[in-house]
Amino acid sequence: SQQGEEDPQALSIQEGENATMNCSYKTSINNLQWYRQNSGRGLVHLILIRSNEREKHSGRLRVTLDTSKKSSSLLITASRAADTASYFCATRTYNQGGKLIFGQGTELSVKP
Amino acid sequence: ETGVTQSPTHLIKTRGQQVTLRCSSQSGHNTVSWYQQALGQGPQFIFQYYREEENGRGNFPPRFSGLQFPNYSSELNVNALELDDSALYLCASSGTGSGGAWGTGELFFGEGSRLTVL
Image (cartoon, rainbow over all chains, first blue to last red; front, side, top):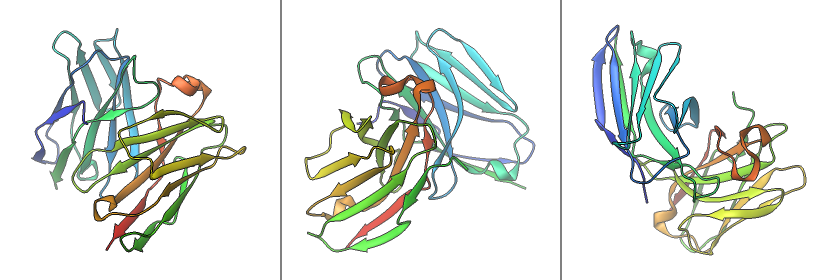
């Protein structure tokens, strides 16, 4: 079963605009991670935020985590056509060993 | 490039057949996990191997089985294939820097093996 739910399911923006994707989850977590997947290919890790962190930055990426609301958001600033991909949040929980539980993903399309 | 390689990249099987998928983990990584990703869905955890032993399993039937070898490469075997087994199968590796068997860090994914069951 999926732990995370992502919103929106699909997002279409123009190059240069910002893209915001949201993720909600159900149980207490150890950390939350965001991954990117180009069409039909493997997933690439983008950023990890621990349960005791509230915000993290990496280049044009900004991730926030609100454990009281069990939600996270991923912001991509100044988007580029090359950012077109599916983005997934994934959680690690304390009682689930090493597995990641993925959301359904947000399909981002950045138009030139 | 993550250093995780999977083979084959694509394959077609018929219902009832058996399939073996292979994965070479990134150098230095001792933990391998397998995920199934149906079209339009997020990946779902199948199982994880740490130092040649299964140490976590998702909600998949016993006809999904695996192995990890001393060099930390891995196989996923699926018996009695069903139409719903059609999916992208992803292998991911992680190392002790990610917390070992109960790793909490990032996973490094291969490009996947796309299985079609007819």
